[in-house]
Amino acid sequence: MPSLKDLRNRIASVKATQKITKAMQMVAAAKLRRAQEAAEAARPYAERMEQVLANLAVAFEGRDDAPKLMSGTGKDQVHLLVVATAERGLCGGFNSNIAKLARDKARSLIAEGKTVKILCVGKKGFDAIKRELGQYVIKTIELRGMKNVAFSNADEIGAELLSMYADGEFDICTLFYSKFESVIAQVPTAQQLIPADLPTDAAGGEGGAAAVYEYEPDEAEILEDLLPRNISVQVFRALLENAASEQGARMSAMDNATRNAGDMIDKLTISYNRQRQAQITTELIEIISGAEAL
Amino acid sequence: MADLFQFELVSPERQLLSEQVLEVIVPGTEGEFGVLKNHSPFMSTIKPGILKVRKEGGTLDEYFVRGGFADVANTGLTILAEQATPVSEISADDLATQIKNAEEDVADAKGDDAKQKAEQALSHLRDVAEALKAA
Image (cartoon, chains in turn green, brown):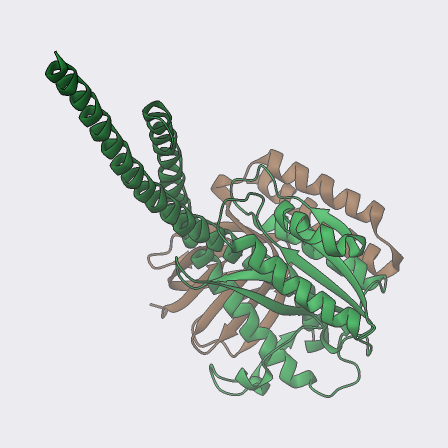
């Protein structure tokens, strides 16, 4: 049975913890709003890009001269997994969910006898993966100290992927990130980046058929110009979604922590009061029985 | 009085402009072209350069754009630019760094094709720098 002093100390320490988690929750809420705005601002670009690519992809479907970024290398031996996570912890299951999805995928690929390479974006993902799959990690990119994700960050990663692809270092590239659905729901997602996974059936929606378009320079050149850009855009979008998800996850995790701390304080206070009462009762009994004995 | 049409200028980070305009002059890879209302559907990549937007009333806005493409559809013109900055906000220093980067690209480029592309980008940037100086 802890003494009264111990209980007092514990209550004070839990209260201090609660203050911290509460502050973190509020910071996360403010950051979440900004991250969400950034993600929304980037949406038109990505959507237009997708639409245009889908239009172009229809023209190239089934053709042999389609760019390699779209048709693939014709093999699926070497897989590159790009795992995008946060730089910081204390955000609930955010990092571990992404890492888990990537690990499962890596395991099943290895079981199939494929070669797996992993590129980590964000420190926490690397931490979660290195114990089991450390030998497959070829590179870690840290985005530390960056307040907001800029397109240039995504562009660098995109350029890195493209040069690796051009050197034939992998056949298929999959990007892992967390999709932001709402503050309480973030869905870890795997998206195939290379070869580009284009929804060809969605084409021709706006302004009629794609065939009426005039292209300058011709379709092939435009497509070759656009596909590398698309990689960067997709990476950028993933990073933004991740940023919003991270803050959302942190917010709900910290909300939980604050509530748990509150419950704990209540419980501790009750047992503190009980014990105080018991102590007073004992003292009274001692005094009274002492007085009676006289 | 010419008719207005919908024009959107979008960069990956934000939407810079979305409004009704009179005319847009776009620096296409194979030459500048102007877009008025009811232009036929058309798509072109763009080179680094100055994008001119004539708004209702005749005021002319200028934007520096780099990398991307223009998409003219029945509904209007959309420009997706990797970078887009109003000319009034761009500084000579910015441009100088970009030119330096482009020079490094030329030095790093592997293969003739890549080299040619990098050199092209560099010469475009130099053109822009000169155009801005003159203005």
